[in-house]
Structure formats: structure tokens, C-alpha cells
Picture 1 (tube, one colour):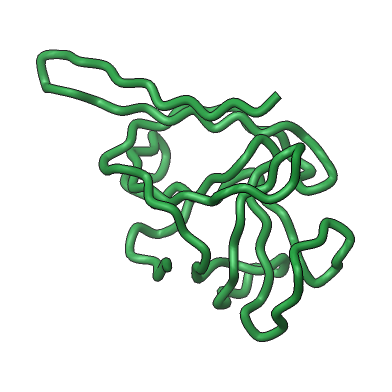
Picture 2 (picture 1 turned 135 degrees about the horizontal axis):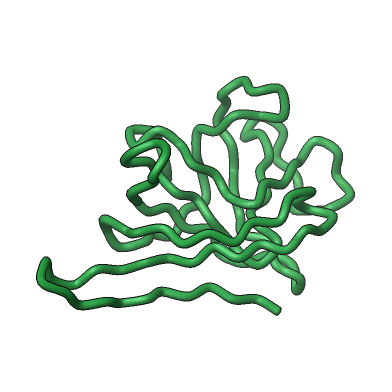
Length: 130
């Protein structure tokens, strides 16, 4: 089941938006995640990002959301994280996000070993996105 929830809460400090990331363990993402983040801005769709590859080396990547139905939109939004402070949350469908190098463009394919999946990404707030 795909669930992406934006929670709006009003309080004495005004309107707050919370984003629930609920990713199931699957063939795209070996880790399941269920976490709620306080958004500091409006989520925006993205298709390109500077992100770490499987070995941790930052590189230009194409990115898409991945769901049990296949490709979906990926989003980025500045959030407040209890452990890291302000970070850029990158999230997709109920199976996370999928990345591939911009150097070797190919169709999105769960079987392609040059591509990799993540449940979501928490990146430096100044990282390049597009």
C-alpha cells in the first residue's frame, strides 16, 4: 500500500506541515522506514540531484520515486531532523527512491545493477537539486 501523507497542524506558532515517509522493505530498498518529518517548506518535484553512490562518493544522479506500481515522482523538501538539524529530505513512493548516474543514461529498471535504491535520503540542505 502506498502512503504519502502531508499532515497540517495549526498551533500557537502558526501552520505546520509534517511529511510521513513510509517505505516498505523491497527489492528497491533493503531497508524499510516509517518516520515523520516537520517540513520547513513546500515539497518540490525533482529529477536530478547530487547524491552519494553505493560506495559513498557524491555524484550527479537522475532520481525518481519508486512504488509497488513502478516509477513515480521524487520530491525534495527542507525539514527539521532531530539528529541532524535542518536537512534536505528526498523521498518518493512506498518503495523509496531510485538513482542512476547522469553519465550512463538508461531506462529505469529494477534489474539494472548500475542503478540503486534508497528508502529516502537526508542530505545537506545546500545540495544541488533539479
